[in-house]
Amino acid sequence: MTLSRKPPFAVPSATESIRILPLGGLGEIGLNMMVVEYRDKILIIDCGLMFPESNMMGIDYAIPDVIALADRGSDIVGLILTHGHEDHIGAVPFLLERLGNPPVFGTPLTLGLLQGKLEEHDLEKQPDLRLIDPAVRLPLPPFEVEFFRAAHSIVDGVGLAIRTPAGLVVHTGDFKLDPSPLDGQGTDLERLRQLGDEGTLLLFSDSTNVESPGHTPSEREVGKMFAEIFPRCRGWIMVAAFASNIHRIQQAIDAARANNRRILITGRSMQMVCRVGRELGYLHFPDHALIGLDDLGSLPRDRVFIITTGSQGEFRSVLTRVALGEHRQLRLEKGDVVILSSKFIPGNEKSIHHTINNLFRRGAEVYYQTIHPVHVSGHAGRDDLLEVISLVRPRFFVPVHGEYRHLVQHARLAGKAGLAPENTLVIENGQPLTVSWEGCRLEESVHSGRTLVDGKGVGDLGFDQLRDRRQLAHHGMVVVQIVLEAGGTRILNGPQFHTRGFIPQEEKEYYDLAGEVIRDLLAEGNADFIDDRDLLREEIRRRLQRFFNRTLQKRPMVLPLVLEK
Ligand SMILES: [Zn+2]
Ligand SMILES: [Zn+2]
Image 1 (tube, rainbow, N blue to C red):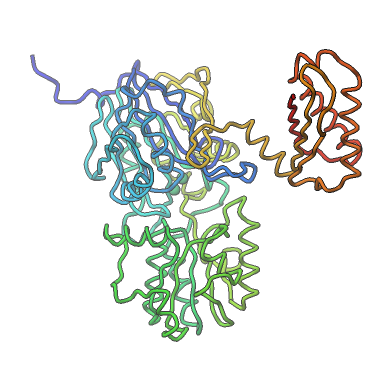
Image 2 (cartoon, rainbow, N blue to C red; image 1 turned 90 degrees about the vertical axis):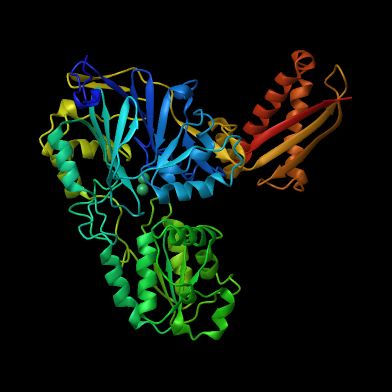
């Protein structure tokens, strides 16, 4: 018997099928996670988090709910990380053990950034991190994963070509088509064309910027802007950017050095990324170019360059404190320049505008994306997306990484590339899809959603508790305490009111009236209130709420405490 030298994936069978299941990132921006399943084997692509939306009060992060993968740990052959952004790697420390500690694959920077996060969590088992070489195919039977370079706002990103017994699955990861990338590692269009020639069963592509017309400009455009701005400045120059945007940092540092300025790196995450980036050879500048906060006094202002984070107006970031004039060593003066070199992320506009207003108040000149081209996107624009679909020519197309409208627009764009509408599937988290060359089938949706991370608690708070927090935040709280005689309804003590975020308890006259409500209730002589104190508590709550609403149109949270003596 002679063994076929060709592995089975080279001859995909029309009758074989794969099942895909998105668990995050489809119908929302953030917490990306995609499951690809063949028979009982599972490959996971990315495992990201989402920073809290404004209504997620006090929550630190949201991560994908992976209940659909409960007890499947031994079936997971690997978790592949496309790049080092939080929305792709941020949930790994929280979910690795729940997923049965599968091996995690990524490029050096991606794993370097993940390692930094893992060290902040004490995991019981040492995570199994495995470096990939994008030039070498990775066998993960029954899958085989090939990597191709994807240019993005972080270096070392990859897209995936996954060979399965049912056919080839291409996942772009987050990407742009930078025609002149700084590291020469643009998105590999030639490889995408070849994958199209080979025959692609299914394409997943990044929908983030489908609403941006045309092509996304090269990262170099920002470098040109820095080269224009820097020589004109006579004071400090401060650039705020995302710590993960290593090319942006490099360009800013290059412009600073070309203008004879020394470099101060501030902010914890910026310092961490600069250290890891230099160690791994992604960032280049000599030690002697660096200064510390203590050196500021001895250098003329036109010899200083400061790089930091906080471009989203984050509370407590260095930039926010500088803008408020609350940073001890970094005090802006007239003639200083601050450049916010990043996107205004939707939802953050208010805090960003607040920061910009305050920077102007300090006398600084401020450059920001609305007025100056000091930022370009890391995601492909509409024409770039069309080009990718046209090159890959997949049999089926599933738009990923976007809010629902982005997915819909991306699906329509695929129609322009000649894809039949029935082969383009707009699906959301928890919607499994079975795909073969013969056709595709939507299956009954499975449980999915967001797990909330609050301090050390992962999933111990649900949306009911969030609703409570919202009520507390918007309307305040009234605690009312009464002591009743045991087995009766006679009041021995109280009612005593304690409030937070509501009319202070010292307003005696008002709370005397509120107390009447409880006395009247007890005077009704309802015998059930003797046997069932919960019923009594609930009725006190209801009547007080009605009282506050009727008298003042306020709706505080009311917490009755009924004690017995
Ligand atoms: Zn990204
Ligand atoms: Zn992303």
